[in-house]
Length: 632
Image (cartoon, rainbow, N blue to C red; front, side, top):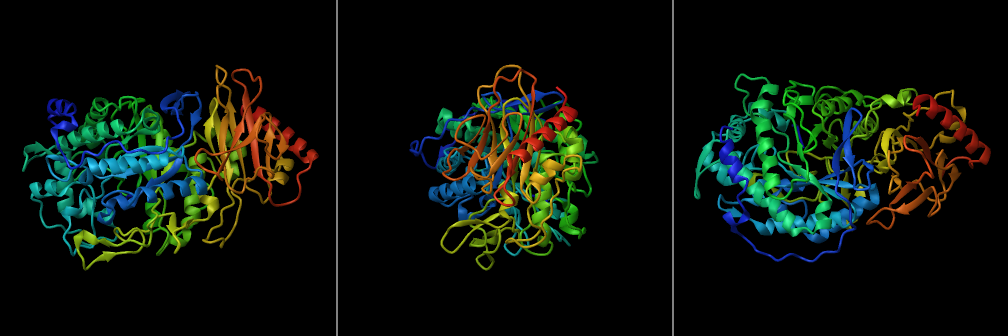
């Protein structure tokens, strides 16, 4: 979560170092786990002027899910997302059932992996693998993330207002950094700009400073890459081929910050220091058996904050399909000085900037963090802020204009929201190892409270935001090229069913029958083009819980009907790994390559009964709209 070298030959060689170069804390055997449902690997693929994820069946895939989790920053959790395999399983099941999520960003810690310069903690990695399995066995894909914030907790003293996570104690001790102080800081992220200890440590990492350790002299970045190689090799060895297929890639470094630009611009710094690090990490992935997985690389953390923006990987050249442009988005203005609420289309420009930058570097975009606080000053605006973020990831044009400009909406963005913490509000973390500063509230980390779930007194997980915001209709896999998508969630502006309810995806008066059909109802529209070769699997959309088999309406050229049967051109099925979550399957019959399809999907559990005449009239309007906006 955000507020926010010269030894290439040596590092290339170190990428080949195996786990045998380290002393293992534990040599546990491969543990048994329930066999996951087989998934095909994802690849980054070109589509016209953009790039996206495609599965083994040739379908365009949208990934939606959550970060798991900020608890990795906490010592009470042994620097892992969960305290037990049972907790991981309980969390994975709830996530699948309550939201239909199909991806997580799974956080691990350098400190957890390498507690001493000569030790890789394989017991830690084995626990991480078992927790990952709890998700892959339920059809959820995994992005592994090396997480850091403010570089390391060991830069902070026991009485500090703030803390960090990431680098191990032995790295900080060898650096001999000054006493830390943020000065007058209102947000913890300001430490990246004003805390000299934090800045010097980051500066040393990017320049691969040589440090003396109990295991001898080593470059600090070199040490990181050595343990990362061992980590990736071990994870791959512990996972079956089917499980490894569910791993979509690796995020090498969360929210990189410079520590000092040395007179350069942020763009120059990225080209000089950040991109060479990513290339070395890419080599480490290849050496560890991850050659088929992309590196999810982040730009300089300040690139799209709204304040003092620097970077964005605009000068590094084409990344290509072995990388993914991996961005975060937080509304820095509304976190600080802007008191206004979110509204229809308010985040289109921000999400379109991510789309545009990914196109410029010739790879797929991914939004691995976004969200807003769920308590404290300004949290009353959170439900619609998160709603607006999802809306802008679905389409880059406002809902009021979508029917006229759907083709200009851009690709649907894959993402993981920050975050999903089953221990929210029930922590017991000694801040900076200080028994006099026990953190229990919220995320138990720098006064944040972002988790969208919490456990009740009986241990049952419940969402803290309106279910309509989190459990969304979205196109999980499209058999062909996705051309446009939009969803009206009718989420309320408050918590617990309170607040205003307002439709943002408004149907123009020129389509009165569709407008009547969707009035006061949740609905979505998906438009796609048939591929050159006949698809081997159907188009799939996740159906929110309010879209039941009996009351879901589909209108379009694939099928027009009320109610979804278990088979046919428009059918319903359960999501993999869930007894309750559902998906919709759309299977056109005999469509020629290049044929454009459009389907309107409506939850008609409320309102007047839908008549055959109303369906037919809506289908006629949708067909005319499709022909006008998406000519074959």
